[in-house]
Amino acid sequence: RKEVEQDPGPFNVPEGATVAFNCTYSNSASQSFFWYRQDCRKEPKLLMSVYSSGNEDGRFTAQLNRASQYISLLIRDSKLSDSATYLCVVLNYGGSQGNLIFGKGTKLSVKP
Amino acid sequence: GAVVSQHPSWVICKSGTSVKIECRSLDFQATTMFWYRQFPKQSLMLMATSNEGSKATYEQGVEKDKFLINHASLTLSTLTVTSAHPEDSSFYICSARDGRAVAGELFFGEGSRLTVL
Image (cartoon, rainbow over all chains, first blue to last red; front, top):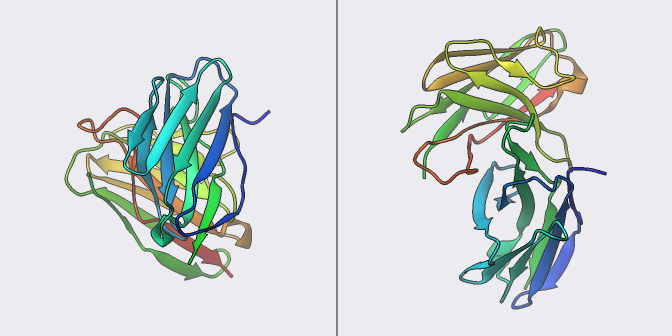
């Protein structure tokens, strides 16, 4: 089982739609969780951290379920500019991969 | 946020030549930088951790003699792909962690797309 797994998509949605991405991780000792956004042929950038209590930033809501080792990202009222690949990232303190482990990403395409 | 600059953005070279990629932290000091490689439709894979003033730590399966890393100052790390071959063609990205930022936030360079003919 891969350390971080995501549905690769692509998710093709119309503007204004609500879309949800899921991610599972294998290491139950993982400490912190993040969603990064990567535009085509660009570097990844932090979108938001994911807290156990769930957190919201404008149209974006992230949730964590430690028992199920599951992370989600919900995007409401999708905009064309939301089109990108969303990377689920897990931080394992003391892990071998520089602590941050990246999923392959879920591609989102928002259409007019 | 913190700024990491990477150069060159694009490079095309002949098989057998060496290519150097630079990564600079512009507004903070980075004792540690990370080098990743990303193949199309794949996740970022950590190649090595670059430590200022000491040897880099390479991930399993990454040839240290092929991917030379030098971290001579607190703001500069370089990755040299020696004797490049077509299978080395990839997107190479460096990153650094700013101690002032939230834990887990990495700032990435713009990436360097290497094509080996």
